[in-house]
Image (tube, rainbow, N blue to C red):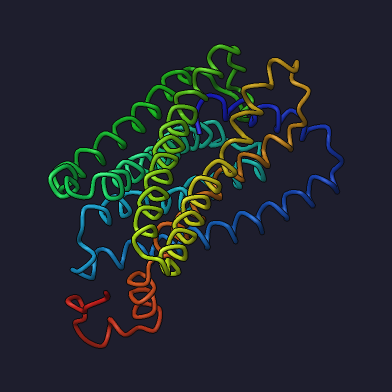
Length: 321
């Protein structure tokens, strides 16, 4: 998603030149199929979230505006970054390749950064909702949420611009034209793009989990049955574990491997690096399921959209919850 991503691209194209023709063709076909399926899933899932929040007035809340920003970033990853990546891999030699490589790199940096930083904003929103519920409405309002969204996209845009400036003036017929960055640059890029957001998200959700556990124990001590409380606690624990676990599972392998790659004298197999990057992109598919499908009101909205009910009459004021 940044300058470290081009390292994997360079190694991938260098190595692909030595791959037998039959194997290369097979890999190309498999990548096209996988990339196409992943793009469709990302587009469908995030499009449902976007339409739901935009159409149903009951979903016009600060929290859902953050989810809307996240869904837009993830949608564009599936619409632009993945198709470009497949095209650049399958057609590694053509006159527009160098331009497309730079455009793809900038879009990748911008959109993936935006997606990750939007996840940070959502974690902050959830912190105030669970840990400081009495101050939630004053701390997290529409104005504050739009500021958070602007900050997320500004950071992401700067990331894309910086990557474009670094690539300026380098021309070739493959993404290998981009020079391998120094170990310091790679590590700093990984820390900024993933390390800081990962620490923020993990710390906040750990705090949320501790507060939720304490609140549940306090309620259970005054309610001897405690069955409903224990059930709610287990559900909250499971949800938080999935939220943090899927995010770390998606992006950590890529950023760890690309950071350690120079240390290991570039011995990590190139296709392993590329697979880890595609795993990171798949986080854009998981996000709609985690942040929207878990809520009953979103499921109701999805059913009305998928069945075409919203096209038969005006249901924008429907009570979803």
